[in-house]
Image 1 (cartoon, rainbow over the protein chains, first blue to last red):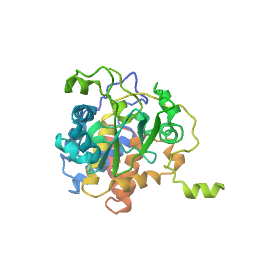
Image 2 (image 1 turned 180 degrees about the vertical axis):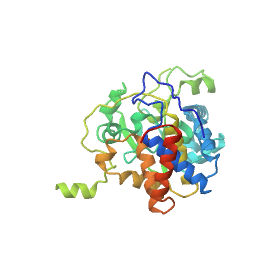
Image 3 (image 1 turned 90 degrees about the horizontal axis):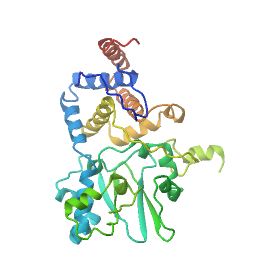
Image 4 (image 1 turned 120 degrees about the vertical axis):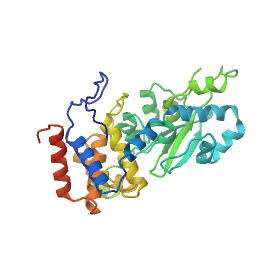
Length: 208
Length: 111
């Protein structure tokens, strides 16, 4: 385990954090150490899992999107079976969840949420932002998605339907955003660089 | 729908469509090291099927709306993990008390 307990203070942090561990951090340390002492967890397992978590970021989702935009056959495989298509690109669903990719079109815009907790396609997007786990986002997105999207600065035209996908512990969604106009000559890596986490959650649309 | 009927039909964590008109606070931050360790701990507990994701979710739900509203996301997770491990008899309350005291002393935290 890390012996470092000097956390850098972030001016944008939502909550403050003292130099010394608080009650819940002490509980986390205690439970982990007890489980290791009992031989139920290996001493390196938590660190190894942190490395897995750190290796996952929206860059992986962006890679899937860029490939899907350029390769119609891959796009079809991605929409048909997200787990298998991600595996083709070397991305495994380390949490053993099902992975469903939903495609935005000129007439349908998708947005993902987890009303029950915080289910999120972590293997391809990393850990979710705080707002995705917030009471406000979870309760309102299924009820008034247009108003929620407007808070993200996203105005979806009235003639476009909005479909909200509610994730579960076993099934995680990701949005395949519309490819922006003016990107016809972009390379795969240029396209991937355009794709943002928020577009793959569905709270933003992409522009070149 | 009567008041009691509402509570029967809606689990406390089932927030979809509930009355909430507050604006979303759209901020970004990195997790604190302990939060990431807590996340990894629950992942590893799921891999070993000691506490699976569904059990964690239910235990989080069992914290109840009053306390849940006061705890941060990973504070709820570590409470959920602790309660699951106690219920399954994998950890004993005395062990947790002894260990938290030891850890608190290690970091010179006054209980």
